Structure formats: C-alpha cells, structure tokens
Figure 1 (cartoon, rainbow, N blue to C red):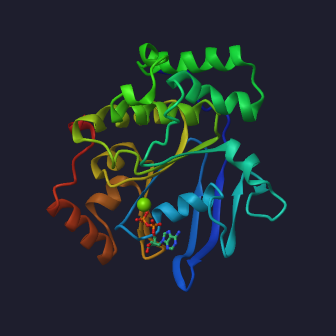
Figure 2 (cartoon, rainbow, N blue to C red):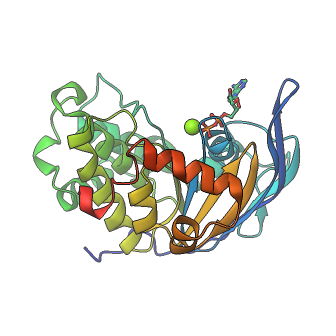
Figure 3 (cartoon, rainbow, N blue to C red):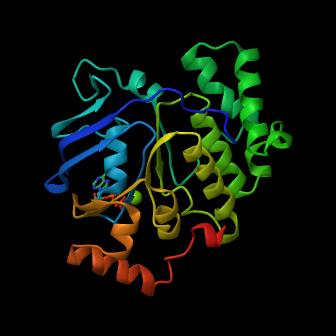
Amino acid sequence: MTMPVADTGTRLGIEGVHKAFGRKPVLRGIDLTVEPHEVVCLIGASGSGKSTLLRCVNLLEPIDAGRITLGDLDITARRVKANHVRKRIGIVFQAYNLFPHMSVLRNITLGPVKSLGRSRAEARDEAMDLLDRFGLADRARDYPDRLSGGQQQRVAILRALAMRPEILLLDEITSALDPELVADVLTMIRDLAATGMTMVIATHEMGFARDIASRVCFLDAGRILEEGLPEQIFTAPTQERTQQFLQRVVEAGRMGGGRSGA
Ligand SMILES: Nc1ncnc2c1ncn2[C@@H]1O[C@H](COP(=O)(O)OP(=O)(O)O)[C@@H](O)[C@H]1O
Ligand SMILES: [Mg+2]
C-alpha cells in the first residue's frame, strides 16, 4: 500500500485560537502546528473541545481570536472563501453522512465533478482506483444502506480522499460503529498514514492513537494541556489531569482498539 495519496505537504498552523459558544469558552488559546505527513491525535474527555477545534480548522465554526494557517495562507482571514479551504482540508465525522439516494460511486465522484471540475470519466476512474485499493470495488454500484456501518464509514473516508485533500481531519470516526466493524476502518487509516497523509484525528481509541500518532495532544477544558510522543503521553504523562484521564480510560477498558484489537 504505497501509492501516494498525499504527495503535497502543507503545514497547518493553529495559533492562539479562542472560541466560545455564547458565554461559554470552549477553546481557550490553542496553539498547534501540524507538519506535513504528521498524524496528530487529539485525546481528552468529552466536552474538552476536540470536535470544535476540528470544526474551526474546516471553517465550520468561526473563531473568536487567533488564526489558522494552511501553508502561507491565513484561512481565517475574512477574505478567504470557506469553500476554497474545504477543498484542501477534508473532514470525516462520526456519522458518515453518505447521500442515501446515490450509489457508492456517485457519493465519491460528486465532489470532484461538482467542485473540482473533473470530468465524470476521470472522477469515476479515480473513485474506482480508491475503492479497489481499499477492497470496496464490488460495492461501487450499491446504495449506502446495503453496506455495513464500517463499509459506509470507509466510503465516507474515500469520498473525502477523492477531493485530494492536503490534510484530513477525522472526528471520532469509529464511535458509531459496532466493535467488530472498527478494525477495518482503523486499518484503512493506518494505510493512509503510511502513505504520508497528514491527519488530525480526534479519537477515544487510545490503542489506535498510541499506534498511529506521531504526536498526541491531550485537551482539557479547551486547552492543550500536554502534548508529546504517544509513548511519553501514554506511559509517562507529566500532567495530573492527563494521568487522571488515562486512568479513567483504563478503568473503562478502552485502552485497547489498537493493533491488538485489529
Ligand atoms: N454548537 C454549539 N453550541 C453550543 N455549545 C457547543 C456547540 N458545540 C459544542 N459545544 C460545547 O462546547 C464544548 C466542547 O464540545 P466539543 O468540541 O464537542 O468537545 P469534544 O469533541 O471534545 O467532546 C462542550 O461543552 C459542548 O457542549
Ligand atoms: Mg467530539
């Protein structure tokens, strides 16, 4: 699995980002640089701001202060068009949101045809290549409801990849799946990481994060309280809050889900 998905390398810069919903501060000064081909995993309790951060990067939420850069471009500058940025930054959510009335193939080719101006034939060839590569070619003509949740989520990831994003954001993409369907999705993400896809992944699959991340960030109440190599964060966290969080994860039996679970 070495065909490059991501040949471009673009640095993502998150600088002093603040975001509140009403009076409630949700992001309280986030600084994070993601280098090309890095895989950064965001961990932290529910409500710590992981989803909001990813949504801000994809310009689904406006930020209150700070800035976010993609290469040299300040994507949070007022003149920048969100649609232009979203062509460069892909996002996949927990609920895969495939279009139910379109075949798998159409779901994947829609974006490239409609917003990248690809010809149908070209988009179809590329989509079939992607489906083939991830073992889903025989599902191309099916409608989403004929697929398992894991297959649907893999198609949703392919739909994002078909746009050839420079960075892929993944928000708890296995949370809605039955446990036995999680492994195939995680395997796919590992393959993407191996081909150099730059990714920011919010996940509660700690085994997976430990296995795949080049860097792990622990979010606590809207701040990155601690970041480091997975080995360091998971075995020798320096912050008490990180220790408490990981302790709770262990108690809940959620430390697995990595290679051993695959
Ligand atoms: N659209 C919104 N309106 C109001 N509050 C929100 C909205 N989205 C998220 N929040 C709040 O922001 C906080 C962080 O949420 P979220 O980013 O979803 O955290 P996480 O993904 O880490 O669980 C939570 O308290 C949540 O209730
Ligand atoms: Mg979330």
